[in-house]
Length: 322
Image 1 (tube, rainbow, N blue to C red):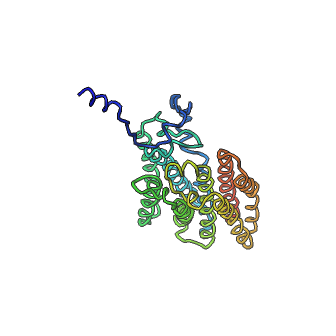
Image 2: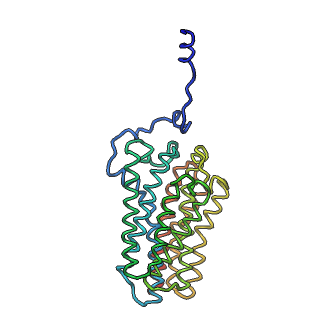
Image 3: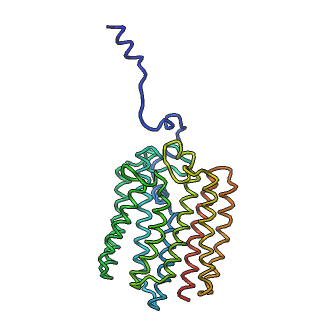
């Protein structure tokens, strides 16, 4: 009996979860108390320009039809876009945290993964922002009486959640760029134009494609930064599948293609030539993506690409209303 007990005591124990977590050094930032700054950081404010760009372009395109800017509806569209963006960022913090995806990462420490905030609390905050987006969206629908847009709004929230949420998140299966292009490009831009003008001029379509490509470029920069960590935890982003070099090429194409669109639009709206000034941020971003030594350097490329996006949108807005 004694021998049997001793055998049981020496039996190796098998642990579940991320095998890298036990071997990774504890980040000292994850040991300090959570602050308001941590919550703001988890909202990932550097991605918010992506919510602003389609609203600028879509509102400008609407003026081409109505000859006037509907400020209230435009601001409501902006609120929906910002609330959705923040909501999806918190939802990603929650979903990646409970999966262990953020146990090994290069960027800032996440709330859920650090253990400083209960996963349920982060989830509640994410759902709260989704609810705010829904409420403002419903107000827009009531104002415009375009009830079918409720389905578009519901689809947007569902897409935001299942980016990293659910049993089969599409962000883990190389479809992140597709959905970002559709919802942060086409849906956000065209939706903004439609609720103000009840029409979709071709300028709105061109602008929607440009906004979507720049949003995809930001996602590529983010995923290129995390490529090694994503491989470790089994997150199959497009970057993981196609590799570093192909991602660099695709990033360059996504950043530069919108400027080709701007040059074409400038033939009809001369102020659109000024959109080329956004290359002052875009070209350094491309240079960093091709020459970076450490993954952390790509955070700057991400920020510059976001700046490129909002500057581009602002110049197109000016061109359309000028």
